[in-house]
Image (tube, rainbow, N blue to C red):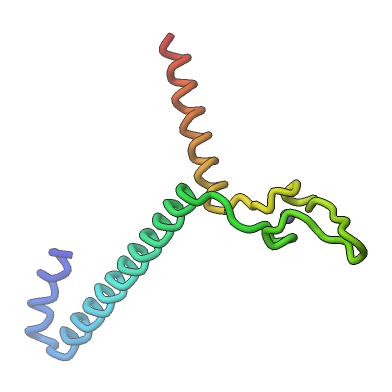
Length: 118
Ligand SMILES: [Zn+2]
């Protein structure tokens, strides 16, 4: 970036309009890069908060039985358990699956290292 600025100054002495274009392009590039960085930061924070919430609240409602855990028969008081959640009415959230996977990978890494050390 320094070499580009150094070449732009003598270039501007001969072609004034070109220098404005270069500066405009450079400003636009920096502005876009800044926007991308901001968006990435916001997305990273949002994902981090979601994973943290999945760490504290790992379960959601089962989507098939809507958290009831059972389906009532239209006749009498008979009911059956939901097959998807085995009657618990719970569903492991997607973020919790990711957290579990990351823990498993990290655990596997430390295990192999400790085995190699012995
Ligand atoms: Zn269910």
